[in-house]
Image (tube, rainbow, N blue to C red; front, side, top):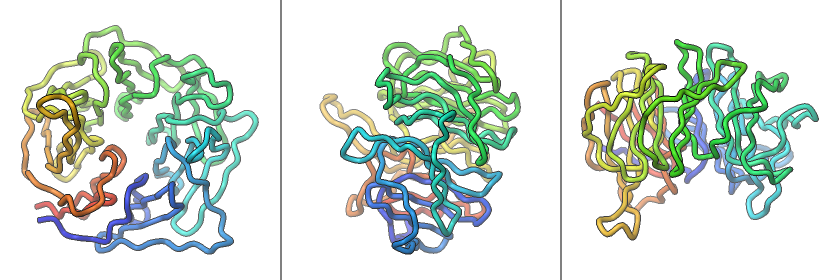
Length: 331
């Protein structure tokens, strides 16, 4: 059943593996909440402690090597001003890391993923807020000490991108996720290359995650689609259907059950005029989808705009946690 916690509201979410803690940052209110597996607690920082400005369209990810949550990019709420620094949260304090002159230009809606092979964050694209030139094509690496430009001529595929890190092949896989055509690209640490292969049909809002057990990227949903695809580095293969037509939440790999999982998501109404929000849970074991939980949080609780950055599987707790909603203890 769903177990009521003290939900902090919507925001960015990361999992701090060193402290076994979910960290939720609410940028519009400059609030930090943490969940230790038992209860939410608001982190009240000293008024004199530096804090990042309220931003929208930023990237938020956990750096496993250094044990900090990293906030990068985004535009200041209510204006076109951009975040000109990177902020790090270590569980006790925010630390501002100004962007160096030789670092990336301020941008919003970048894609950021942790590269465990090289112990660094990799940031790609986003909308350049300095030149107003549209999508930025640069790829940068950030190791906490310095920024390194890895490539300056990446694919021009917008900001609606599904991205995953294939740690076995040491490749970052990006799938342009828009209605103008799907393109598969790979980054080898120095250059992007397009894979001229046929894959999922054109859509928006699909999600992708890496499935270590079968060494493949799994892509599912988007634009009211119900298909599931796997990518092994050379070929996209359509898997069996079974998930509902859905723009799913962020796909998460549940290592305990060895399954790709998503919670909720949106679909179009029968007449196509409005969006229907869902609260169910689905798992993909590499062969088929199952629906072990048909109901989730009640409508009495505040809902996030979407689940894409608000759910995570907590290792060791066998539980998914949801920002702004309720947490489910799953058998």
